[in-house]
Length: 248
Image 1 (tube, rainbow, N blue to C red):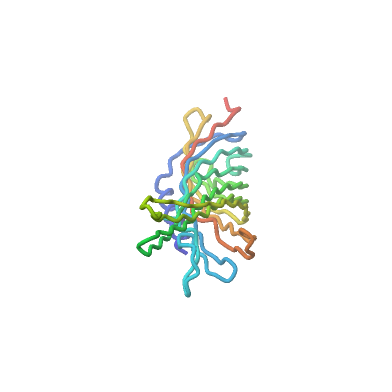
Image 2: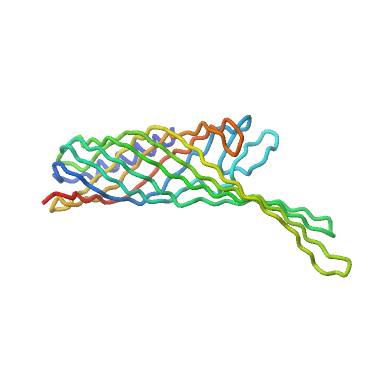
């Protein structure tokens, strides 16, 4: 519900910015955008509630997670599309988010020895998007869109532990070991949103801003544990450019 309110408010603001601009009537275009995504990150993992910013623990009544400090992903999105006419365009985009890293550590000490155990996680999320874009009025830059989101996530987890103590002669001794595991999961969902496009005077380029929401959700095995059902979509804000390759 909060995401829907944010999208409606954003689109209402775009309506106030609308300017008269004809734009290219049709043609193939390529482009790219930079963006920020707020990841929902909630669901279930086996019998546990999952919150991606919670620690990985099984305390009674709590949720498990990957200890993210926030739910923000930053990234780039190259895209290619075809504007069929002033009203309709088809577009394919590929979201390349910067990998998200998190770490959680526990330590114990009895005065003679110190034991540390930790977990570090790297989360790399990619998204392939197929969109249909509609411009309600050819004289305005406002548009809205909907489509399919195919998300792929690569995760690397490193488990480590170490022990520190003084030997019989008072010399410090450190022992430790680490183990690394990797896994891949996928998610599918729908995308909807809108934005504003600002064509250049020569109709060869345009800038745009947009907001979208993805419902992509996993239903997969995660590191050997079944029923990892987590919403990895969320709300995204983007700013980008398009180049119409064959417009004169």
